[in-house]
Length: 500
Image (cartoon, rainbow, N blue to C red; front, side):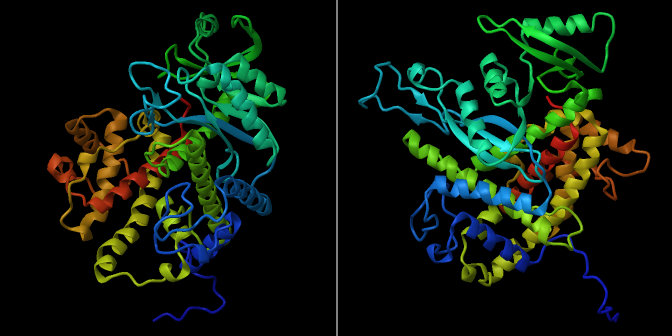
C-alpha cells in the first residue's frame, strides 16, 4: 500500500465534496433570505409558492427574492474578479404555448368582450440577462401583452418594454452592449437602446431592403465578411441610420446573416461580430430552465408575474451556486455543473432532511444512477465539444434538440445502463446532425480511419445497438440523464456555432 506524502497536494477530483456543496447552498439560502426553520419536509415548492402542505419556504415576496438573487450573484462575480464591467446583456421574450401555458377567458366574466369563442390569454415575459459573465444572471423581467387580447393602447409597446428592462439592468450593473434576436429589429427598439447610449447587435429581418443590400454586396464577389456603413433603413415614418455587417452563413436564405449594429466596426473584423453574438444563446438556455418551474395555471396576470419572478430568482440562485462551486472547489479537474432539479431539492431541504439515509432500494438504484449520471454527462460534454468543432451543421440539431418520449419504455438492467446510454445519446446526436439513416450512420462509422466512432468511444456499436427495440429499454428514471446531457450540449453549442 502506498502511503501518501503529507505534503502532497490533495487528490484532484471531478466533483466537489458534499460539504463544499452544502456550504455553497447555505450561502445561497442566506442571499435569498431563505431560512431553515421556514422549510419543512423534503419537498420542492412550485415557483412562486410561499406556503403549502408542509412547505413555507419563501418568507419574502417574489420580487424581494429576485432583487436579492441579482445582487448576490453580481456581488459574488465582482468579488471573484472573474468579470469586468461594462457588461454585455441579452434580451429575449419567452412565450408560454397556448393550450399549455394559457389562461382561458371565462365568457361569463365581467370583462368578457363578447366574442363567440373564448380567447386564450397567453403569457409572455421579456427578460434581460448579463451574458458576458462566467455565469448568466437575469437582471430584469417585464410582462409583454399579446396583440389582440386587450386594447393595445392601454399596454406598452415592445420598445417601451425594452426601455424598462434596460432601466432595471442599469440599476445593478454598468452595461455597454445589447444582444437580441431579429424579433427586436425595429426602429423603436433601436431608438430605445440608443437613448441609453448603448451598442446593439441585432440580426436583420429578411426585409426586401436587406435582401437588396445583400445582392448589391455579392453582385461581383462572395466575401465571407463585409461591412456597409451608415445605411439608412427606409422604415415608413421612422427611417433610421445603422451599419450592416454581413457574415457568410450558407444555411441562411441569401447565404448571409446581416447584423445591425451601431458599434465600432473595427471591433468586428473578420466575423468577430458572430463571436460576440453567440453569447445570446445563454439567455435562451436560461429561459428553458426557468420555464420548468412554472406550472400550468389559470391565474391573474399579477400572480403569473410573481411566478416568473420566483422562477428567475431560483435560476439566478442556480447560477450563483455553480459559480461559487467553481471558485471554492479548488481541486476540481474540470467544469462541474449542478443539475437544476437537484439544486432545487437541496436548496429547499433542511439540514436534517438532507442527511437522511436513503432506503436500501433507493441506495441500490437511484443513488447508483445519480453517480453514473455525472460520468455520462461529463463524457457527452467532451464528445459534444469535438462534434461542434468538427461539424458545422450540428447547429441545426442542437439549437432545438428534443428527445422523443418513445425512447423510454423501461430498462431491465440498470447496472448496465451507463455505457449503453452513452452510445445511444452520442449516436442520436450525430445521426440527426448529419441527416443520416440508420444504415447510413453505420456505413459512416465503419469508414472511420481510426476504427472508433466520432465520439471517442473505444468500440463500434453493432447494428442491433441502433434497433428500435434496443433504444426503448431505458428506465423511467434515466430520462433526466438524456435531458441534462442535451442541456449541457446546448451550452457547448452556444460556444462553438454560428448564430442562426
